Image (tube, rainbow, N blue to C red):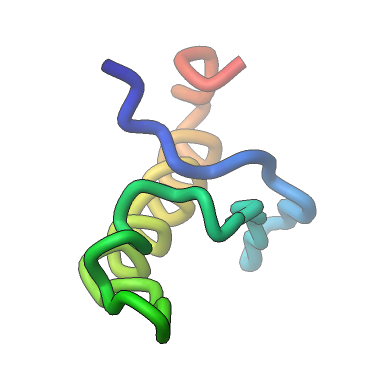
Length: 68
């Protein structure tokens, strides 16, 4: 199972990182959250933020080989 939600890192500097996730209405969680009014669940948003921060920390400490 692939739990990596980030599609790509768009910017990375000494003090800044920016990533992208491409969302479509066909994402599994939209079927139940909420039918007819799809909203990205907060848990997904927090996981996306966490993954970008993890990427940044690994890169900052020269451990980024795991992401390449």
